Image (cartoon, rainbow, N blue to C red; front, side):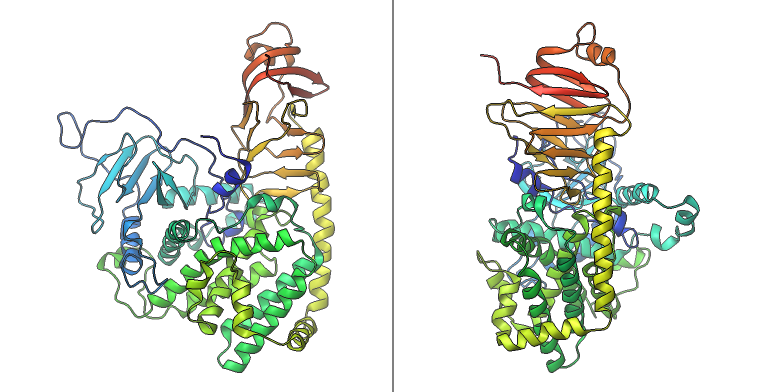
Length: 572
């Protein structure tokens, strides 16, 4: 079933970048409206004549790590988040194109068979499907419906690693520099990161049940002032105040830092459109609170006795003292809030903004643990934000807020911070102009889809919120993943490999370039026509390098190196 623009955008909101030093390069992929129950010929049940034993292709350590997390969160008394019992949450582990492993799913899709091998998940039924996977893309650590059931999804470590290596190869640095950084720490899968990842994505399933109508509308990102100097400086001030609060050892210092954070946020948001502030609240609820469960898990596990299987995992050293990984999360928060992490190799788009909201939400949750013990019940209520809860708990006088903002702006390095964000805005504008020029005049055949003649001239786009660049109030560029466009007349434009796509809502045009040049004769041949196939085509169904195009009624025109596809109303 096709999804509306808002739903399609939100479907990919929970792609969870994984990794350590490569976090800035990982591409979280959008989950488009793909079939939830991919069909294939079912193999004979295990134990039947002709059946061979099932070999687990996914790393069995995933089951050990999930079991370790489940010991804490799959219980009536859940110390990470009271009221959350994950015991009935199914888990999907996958290795793209190789194997799906479903645990505790009440109705696995077609093709899954019971697994009766030596690996076990306590109290969980395991089903396996070979060769075909629900997700074909690497690194999709997320939550989604699988055959109608909300399910935690975790990619195999090889899938995550392949995505990280691909992103490293795409970094615009000399090869020698990239090789020099390729140490074992980058290649290894940190078991503590894996535990955090599992609790993060499992919490999304709980959020969907406990507060299904709360969250972020990713369409609001299209016009967020990502390069605003004042906004980016304000984020940095907030990060410094949150770090000071989380590191404070006494109550007066803690309270002073919280007031400074609230003042910095209030001052920053005074210049933001209301929709932008609402977007921040939404992401801090969805992703920020999921990030908070990672921080909280590291508190809960400290001092506990690990399961015996954990000691077989490379890099695991027990739970004796987890202060260091918690401190690293706070340090990561500070770097993200200062804009020092170019997420997805793109310092000018929405990816850095979105990731900083993961960390701000995490930090505000940790602050609320100290301020207001009952905050977890109230944040699930409609219309309540993390900022609201802090403001209510602290209730500062206006004079205290004004003094807090002045204190924040007097800190050392403020002038340098303003200069850095001014340069970011200038460089970002140049980068955006260059991206538009590449789409309009770069290598490869240009594709221009004109949809203004449709009876309902609008387009629904499937995209990742980590790959959006605003050009102006009318034009937006989408990158990082193959984009899908659906039109009310039933037309579909589906990229089969990522190419930057520009949507001009004023002119009603989609523009992108194919990865190579194609001739008019090649287009005609693929369309099943003779000559150069220009003019009215009627129904169009064509596959070109990097894209498939389906339209009930279209006209083709060549304008220089660009192929225009004019969508027309359905013939009556």
